[in-house]
Every structure is written in structure tokens, then in C-alpha cells.
Length: 378
Image (cartoon, rainbow, N blue to C red):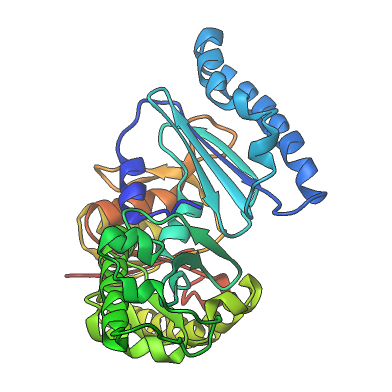
């Protein structure tokens, strides 16, 4: 799975020539349920064609559909899905993004992308990464309360051999141990200190790569999963500010993915609930000081003025319409209109462009019933 970052989200917020097509589809991880996914996809393409033909010439519609059609009968693609799928297309781009949580099936053709499901991925407070570490192997996973998937490492070694190559000492290569057991060192003049030195150089390389290419781009908290004896050496040399003080003391090779997710979420859930509670308290204090708004017109006005510091947005809610980026005026509409998107998605995108923070919040934890809660800077 490719990780999805706020930087990628901001690039999607850049102006693209219309039409901007946003296709979201619920998908299945396992056979035989996955057999229905390409059928539903082809149905969405027919719906897309009808929506586009309301405004655009046939030749332009054909050009746009050609971006989507190769996947219609791509068995390899449909056999390796997660819980959801996002496809975003404009005349100058086409991007496919895997989602770790189910999404409502949705097709929106408008003058901007519908990005709230992706906002939920990149801005949700329940998202985290896991570094599974042994003496000589490293794996990275990304998850939330519901799912955990491996992440392809970018410029980060996955093994001690990859990290050290010819610099790997002979002493390390003479170590034999079963997973989770105390290593055995043998041979004349071979010292545990030299093998531990290899380990530490490997850990430094992993820490550096994960921090630069995964933690910084996503801003996600990082949890360490390793045998107890590796926690202290890794933490002593780590420079990653996203590394959490808590972790899981277990051999990562001896535990399944579902059990790993459950153990990680057991640690993450209190932090998640604490963060949401803090954001809600900050909004309530701000509202008492006339610096917090839940009326959508007031939220829109504060947003275009650059005043919004934090915006809480209700997950899975759509308010058909668009926000004028100059005046903040909300124009209501219906999603079947090719030029209409989602008001909450527009507001969230504007806040992010102005360096504010957006957090997608489950309905039951929202402090308002309007779909939005804004805390202002001034």
C-alpha cells in the first residue's frame, strides 16, 4: 500500500481544469466478495458518462473515460484491493488511491475534486504507523482502528544486509538464533559488542529513513513493535519526534496482522479519544469567546478570511453545494449537477490551504449538528 500524505492532498486541492471527476467505491479484500467490485465499477463508469454528457462534448467525454476504462477488466488490479478505492481524474491527471476504510459509493463530476473521504484518511485522529523491528529486519505498517496494511518502504532498508552491505562484520554473520531467543556468538575473537554495533547502525539507518520518508510526510504517530530488548537501543538512538513513548513488546514475526492491529489500537485509542476531547474543549471555549462557529455561513466567512485555526468536520456527511473562495458565500445545489460538489469538502480544503488544521470526526463525537465546528485564530 502507498501511504497518503497531507502533501498529496494539497496537490489535489490545486486548481485543475474541469471537469474534476471523483469516484469512490467500496471494495473487498477477499474472494468471492471481490468478484462484484469490477461489475460495480463498470456501472459507475456508465453513470459517469451520463453525467459528463450533460455538459461536455462526446469527444471530450471519450477522452476522460479512456483514463478509467483499462481497469474495467484488469483482474490483477481487482484481486488486490483494500476496503475502498478513490479515483480522481481531470484533463491533466489521473490518480488511484487505496483506502483503509469503507467509503460510500460516490461519483461526483464538478469543477473541483470531492476530497472529504481523502481528508478523513489524511486528517483523521485515529491514524498511525507501526514499525516492526527485529535485530536484522524492518517493516512498516499504516493503520487505523479498523485496518492495518503494509507500507512500501521508501529509501529505507528493510534488512541489515541492505543497510550495511559489505560493511556488515563477519561476526554478525556467525550469529545463529531462533526468533525471539538469545543470539549465540561463536568463533575466535568474536565479540557481542561488534554484533550490537551492526545492530545499532542498522537501527540508525531505519530510523533515518522512516523519519525522513514516512513520518515527516504524513505527520503520523509511530509505534514501535519489537522484542523488549530492542526497545531501549532503538529509542536511545532514534531522532524521530513522531515515535511514541509506548510500544508493543512482542516478536513481530510471531503475531498475525489482525492481532497486531488489535494490540496497537489498544495503545492508540486513549490517545485518539484524548485528542478529540481536547479539540472539542478548545472549540467550546472559543465559542464562548465569540471565536468559535458552527453556523456554516459564519464558518465559511471566517475560512475565506484566513481566521480558522482548527476545523472539525463530521465524517460521512455531505452538504451539496459549493463555497465561493472570494466571498465565502455558500451556493446550495444537488450532487447530480455536474458543477456541484460538497460544502464541507470545500471548507476543509480552504482551511488546509491557509495552514489551518482539519480533523474528520465521527458523528457521535461532533460538538455540533451542522457538520462543522471552527475554532478561529482571531
